[in-house]
Length: 89
Image 1 (cartoon, rainbow, N blue to C red):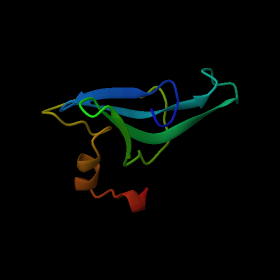
Image 2: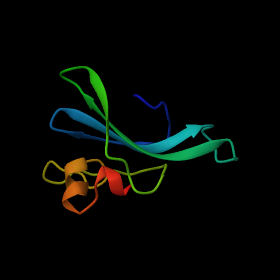
Image 3: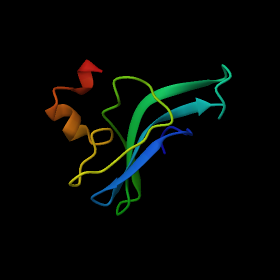
C-alpha cells in the first residue's frame, strides 16, 4: 500500500483490491494513532498501487461491501456519481 495502516476495509472489484480508510500509528486508540480518509487501489494484473478519491471523513474499523460489482465506500466512480469530487473532499 502507498499508506501503511491497520483497521482498514478492503473489497475486490473487477480484479482490483480497494483499500479504504484505516488507522496509522498505534493499533490501539490511546492518542498515538490517527484515522485516515485515504483510499487506494491495487491492480492485481499490473502489480501497482494508486490513490483514488478518499472518504469525506477519516475512519478506521471500516466495513465494506460489494453490490453488482460496485462499493459505495471504495468505488470513486460511485462517489463522483453521488456528487462528490476530489476537490470537494
